[in-house]
Amino acid sequence: MKEKTKLIIENDIATIKLVDPENLNALGKDMARELLQHLQELENKSEIRALLITGVGKAFSAGGNIKEFKESIEQGKPGKVMDELLQDLYKIAKILRMYPKPVIAAVNGWAVGAGMNLALSCDFIIASENARFRQSFCKLALIPGFAGTILLSRQLTWQQAVEMAFFGETYSAQDMKELGFVNYIVPEEKLEESAFEWAKKFAEGPTLTYARTKRLFFDALSKPLEEHLEKERQMQIQSAESEDFKIGVFAMIEKKPPKFIGK
Image (tube, rainbow, N blue to C red):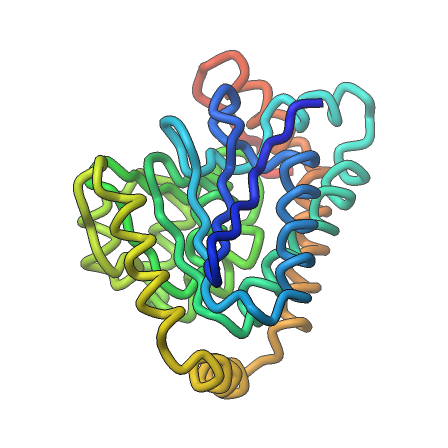
């Protein structure tokens, strides 16, 4: 089976590339498993001082694998399949937020749904000029999963977070910079070079201080991350059992507007 991710270690910098451009680097079960394995491996490598995550092709990541969602519905077990996928995805979310070294997302194109939240789970985001972001969960009658309800509500106003979650519209790199999500925007051809330069800068910095600072940021949050993520995970599983999830999946497959029924 063709690998969907690639781990590259250069001196004290690790780079994880999402390398499934044919599927727009969708975070399906295989990619989620590989990504988790890489992150778990890096947790045991104290010599790594910075982590860079990026994609190849037209997308950073298009989010959930719509083909796998369709198959889960046809097999009559969308909740079970969603649960199995989220077991890995939520471990990834926790590792990224708790990872004691700086984590940079180099967003090369589309970052949609879980793909957008993968980027937001990193400490820094450098985006190419053609990067596009979208909280597309509502198009499938799903809640903003993969830590989305934390990532949006704690950085945006209530109204901004609701607008982003309920409309599922596309935001440019500049839009996201103005909202405070994107740190820097660079030309597409300079994205990987620029992101690696930042990784080198962080790797040369006081990484223990970075780790302690991140830990204190987490402790300052009003609600424990693990508690909230588990509640969010359970709600996503319930969402996958809904009729609207089926409607959204088949509408996207058939490339027509979904007609949700609220059930």
